[in-house]
Image (cartoon, rainbow, N blue to C red; front, side, top):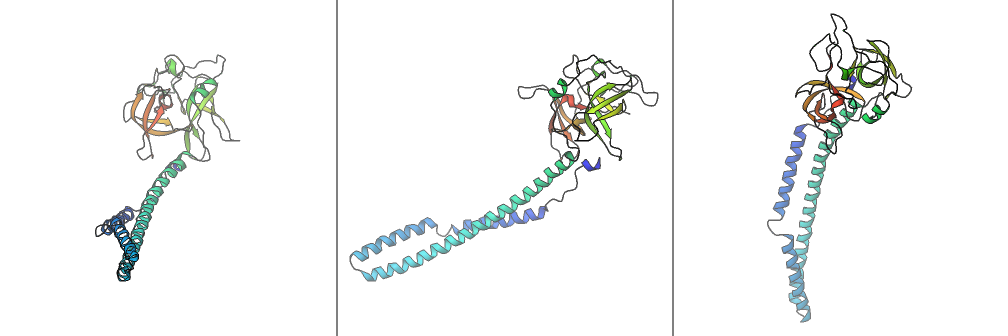
Length: 310
């Protein structure tokens, strides 16, 4: 399943970000320095005072005072213009460096998100299928129940999450038509994936036909299966739905249905099983999926299972 793993994405060098931060600090310092000697407000006050004095000089025909004040006013206005232009240049430079920092962060985030998408979305992309929808599709007939027998001395069936072997599945895990399972689909090229499937036919106590709940257009959707490549999922609408499914403790290795897909991926339990709430209909586990860079996700507990030993 290498194609689903996160590729090595080149991240912006940390030294680049540090260098930009240094330049940004210098620019901010220049802004502070430009305001320490004489603020723009002080200069504007002077301009207004000179204009009032010029009006007074014109009123009494004091052209000598007029010429002197006009010269001072010209110098002050030029100084205001230079200060404003310098201040504007510093602000532009600061904004530009902030944009660079934002770009570095954005590129890093985009690379991370793209890597996640590349892992989760490929030619076999699977859209989200609600548990209610899958439950409603169960057949109304009364197909035979299957209490699984042992696989033999070398390979024994084990209920999910239980260490004992050579035992039949508990009633809650009995395999019947319409039962949801995690199915290990071997694509024949050395690659395999766990997908959400439904038992559509019980051949015998050890053999089944399962159907992909969300096949790709034109692709095969039904597959032969045995107890070696399916794991029963809790039927939350059945009595004693959790029989044989213990509460997995922290750090337990599991496979779980990744949010918004019908594919199962390796993960580790962070905490759970959390009880339902007004906003969350089902019990959930908090998980960290492999190659998800420490992100914690909540997954319905009936879509989290331990793969039994083969």
